[in-house]
Length: 180
Image (cartoon, rainbow, N blue to C red):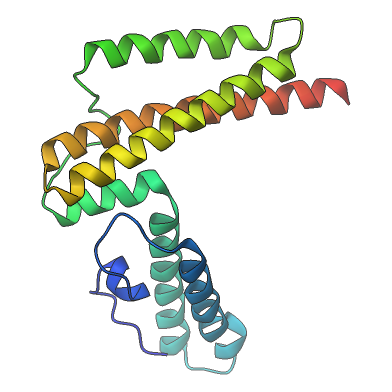
């Protein structure tokens, strides 16, 4: 299989550069790539062919991980639209949003110390998922309207929710480990 490593991730998987993509179709195309690029297929190939196979597999894996993730896909679309930012250092300038996320962070910390920590964390997880979905919908609307500055701010907000969701998951895992 000959894959052009200069194509963007959407082109690679045969999608238009839109935020909304069919996740089942993405997974199916990824499985096809994996079957064609599996290292066993190149066991008897030349060193150069094996190296190209490894590079191609890495490219396909990165493309898949990016398109599969709501946050990474948002960041990638912004980069393709020449909206540069450093997701590790930039933050939303929305003061009300920042206060809300600080409160949610405190709720996550307190949830595991309640009488029913599993229930508290589960309720918080559901709330975070709904807030994330609202931001995903907002990003898609802004991106489709070519309001890229607002879309960038929404992507930065979405990043906060991904961190909070990961924090809740870690708290849940920690509680589960303590029960064992």
